[in-house]
Length: 201
Image (cartoon, rainbow, N blue to C red; front, side, top):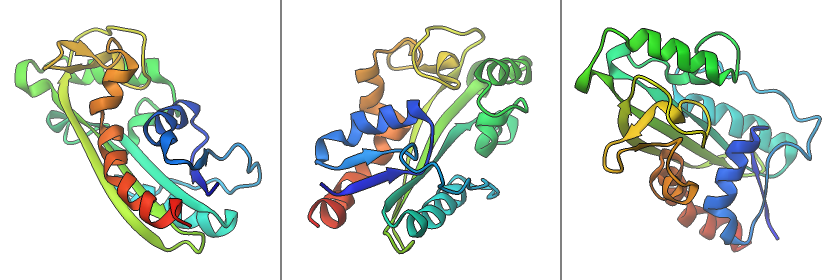
């Protein structure tokens, strides 16, 4: 079974990727089996830049196919923030509560369409030599509401309202989120590539 490594130690992200790509017959894992894998500094100013850094840095070291994925929330009224800094918007990486609180404070003067936002997921696939084979992006548009709703998902999910459902990502069942999220849309584009270049080997 071909191995595909998600260049991350984020278990929630891996769980979503397994839900989206687990039926392809791949041994999909994160970096847990590779304790000596280098930490990749996300120094790029774009999602695709950071995703590429992860993929091309890790693949030749691990000698495996690697998906570098970078994702985040973009709020046009805030000049695109939190953007690539979504996970550390309030200063500490992965502090969802603090990040959500800062977002609400920054958006307090705004109402209506000005609270529009979209999630971005960029995934870059590199072969075991570190050569980029594919780069895809998925987006999901919504609104940032004024208080958290729901306990599902992670990151800004309890604040991200999907208008067509009238619910936040924190309230939607996982299977519904997985059908239309930014990561689902990126992985949908990646499936065909994986089937051609990884699964058939």
